[in-house]
Image (cartoon, rainbow over all chains, first blue to last red; front, side):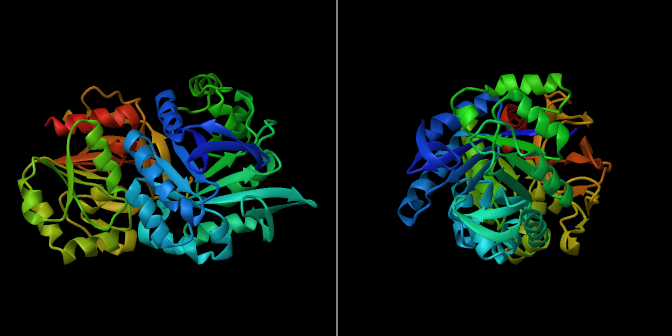
Amino acid sequence: MLKKRIIPCLDIKDGRTVKGINFVNIKDAGDPIELAKRYVEQGADELVFLDITATVEYRKTLIDLVQRIAAEINIPFTVGGGISSVEDVRNLIKAGADKVSVNSSAVKRPELIKEIAQEFGNQCVVVAIDTKFENGEWKVFVNGGRTATPLKTVEWAKQTERLGAGEILLTSMNNDGLKNGFAIDITNQVAKSVNIPVIASGGAGSKQHFHEVFEQTGATGGLAATVFHYGEIPIPELKAYLKTKQIPIR
Amino acid sequence: MIAIIKYNAGNIKSMQNALHRLGFEGVITDDRATILSAEKVIFPGVGEASTAMRHLKERGLDEVIKSVTQPFLGICLGLQLMCNKSEEGNTSCLSIFDADVKQFPPKDKVPHMGWNNFESIQGELFKGIDKNDDVYYVHSYYAELNNNTTAVCNYISPFSAALKKDNFYATQFHPEKSAGVGAQILRNFLEL
């Protein structure tokens, strides 16, 4: 049976791991290579690595970090942040990334999804969607959650699937960093409306929250950062707990 | 020396990293002489079948692959390209394994992405592996069960998780991305 994936996310700024509350007030959570190694040992099913600055001057730092992390780990590895061309993807894959995650640049130019899928296969393209519930609707936000777009989340998710996305990483900005649980409603809506895997992200604060999202939605993975970085939820403990709840877990 | 066949498919670096961690040096190459003189040959890959086949043919690598006599391991798209034909891009493949490659019907999430266990395993590649062990898959196409099938995985329907014929081995899953279980399977191949 296909297992539900537990995915730690490393948000990287200037070569260090950081994590904020609701995307601001970022504080340092340590050396990304050490964290990556620790997660593999703990039984993480995949790693996601998001460069949240991704400015030109840090591109080189990013490639170098990807190379060093890829050399250390033997689980799948997704890299995102500032990717806007097939050339960017090629460089990251050459450095050892298995998949790339695109967000703002795909909203700006949806054809990018198609271009990456054609060159590297659908499985390579993770579309990250930052979503926020405002005025009775789930809408898509870009630029690290700073900019609203007119896109409706479910419609955008469907469009990315048509364009060749292999997976959707859905982050609820309403839930992110608050540790009150994943956004069950929108995760379920998106998972039901596409036939590609959906990873739930934003809001994990306890083991029960992972159980909830796997039991109540079609999400095939749960992603979190803070609760893993600071050891609040040890991954082995989380996995053991989910197994007792009959969730298929590696 | 372990030759890793270089073609236009992705994440070849992952395989080189995996070999390095096991204490072997993998050389990424599309040179005929280097491939044919290697102790082992690995044919990795993710990508699109028709594009990959065209690339192999343009460089004469299709014939080189078929003439390899040392232990040979195809992975993921590599496995699919070693079959007769693939529904992906309606592609004629290398016909090492007598099997066709089909697309998963949309009865569940496609791609089949993530960790899955085996229905059955047999043969030297799976020495020390339990059928309840999980390995990492990411694919939308699969090889049907056939006489060369040595491991079965069930997703939507049972399919070939591994194949073997003479010196040719192949896995649909990614041993280089399957943590300790994958490392053991790679080690088994490297010790053949």
